[in-house]
Amino acid sequence: MKTATRTLLALSAAAVLATPILAQRGRDERLPRECREEIVRLCGMNRGELRNCLREKYTQLSESCAASIRERMEAQRGAGEGAGARRGPGMGARAGAGAGAGAYASAKISSTVVYGDHLRQQVDIYTPDDAVGDAPLVVFIHGGYWRSLDKSDHSFVAPPLHDMGACVVVVNYALCPGTPNEPVTIPDIAVQMTHALAWVWQNIAKHGGNPKDVVVAGHSAGGHLAAMLLACDWKSVDKTIPAHWIQKALSISGLYDLTPLRKTPFLQDSLKLTAKHARMASPALWPRPKKGVLYTVAGGDESPEFLRHNRLIHQTWGPKTVPVCEALPSLNHFSIVTDLTKQGTRLNALMKQLIQVQS
Image 1 (cartoon, rainbow, N blue to C red):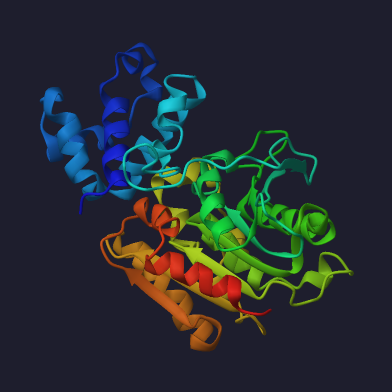
Image 2 (tube, rainbow, N blue to C red):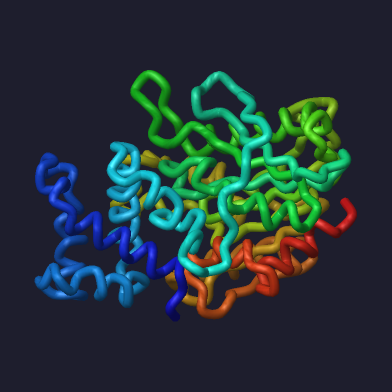
């Protein structure tokens, strides 16, 4: 499969490996030795061929190596090294923009609002230009293994959702591991999401959205959080919110049993995931929600583990709660997000279907 997403991502990855600026950084900031060796095994030692090789073979990298590359790309962006050029495609966000892929450009933010005390506890609100109030609402939660990325990377989801008649909220949250004085765990992030959604319930009507007609969607870690929010007892968060308020969720490449992540080397230092926290934050280990539906999808070209998680939540929560569980052909962990934005795709149709379902 050759898509604009894969091409742009691979080019950015190649730039991370080849750019001279990395040689000037400390050895601790280089890609892990195992990842460098994996790339050499895959592509050889010829740097002149590296870009082309990674463009074609990026999805053959292990998840830990791909994650390390994504982190280096994010670090480059944060340092201002070509940030504008790589901001979206490098992380799968705004993928294909300006590359003839037909993807949407970023939308204009109507408002940015703080929902908590942490600097990152903010939401961006995208109100359609022709909004007349009481529009169905889509809340989108970004991924990044709970430890990276930003709401601004995912502004590209707003325009196609506007085309479906929706008001859009994209959520930020404090990332793992936090700081020594303010540590952040995955259960902490789940609590942050309830605070963000409580703000939505109380305030979104002022921005043209209908708080009684909400789809919560997310990618990867965001898909995991979307599933958790479907199962939330909202009365325990805010007595003014109906107990089973969120009844529509879409999880794209979500993770549902976090127990194996405790033994995943590249995540151990940042997530600091304890056995207790893994159990607390694993939707697949919970009883199925009493109301509502979860659509769960993954790319057919994703790793076996992501495909296993996709099946797992369908098996544990059952077809009544999870009526859609699909592996979408020829899509990987990055291109699947772009597919959401393309009219005529299965994922775009599923989102449209959820928006139209009456809560």
